[in-house]
Image 1 (cartoon, rainbow, N blue to C red):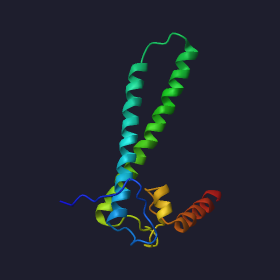
Image 2: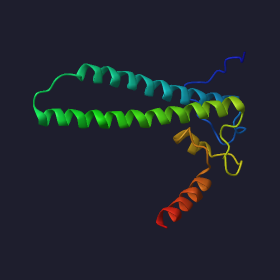
Image 3: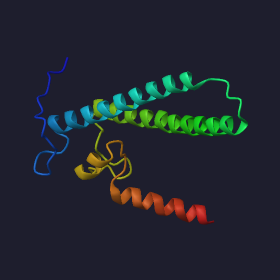
Image 4: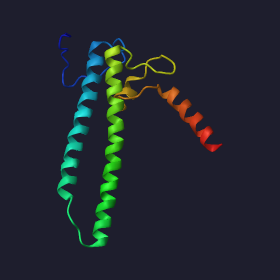
Length: 140
């Protein structure tokens, strides 16, 4: 079992420390877990709200509006389900020691990018190349 790693509340990964050292790894692991917990809590509240909102609405316009709201909420939940899968994948990469490295080049992903988007799997440059290729193919 791993020893608990102490991180001060104000800790942020810095460029002048070894890349993906224990503190950085723990920082991103906690960040991902907190994000996942927040999404799951929000989902539980939404499901509760949707169950409470299930009622017979006689006015057709009100019913249509309620159905539209429900469809939008379900789409949002689906996006969040996919996001949780990406968070789980990032947590797996942390456990395997692969987190923080670009899947395309193998180079480290910048700490600023990881802090802003902890599920990132590509460096900014590789992501931009990927998006340019995608745009070229979409335009065909």
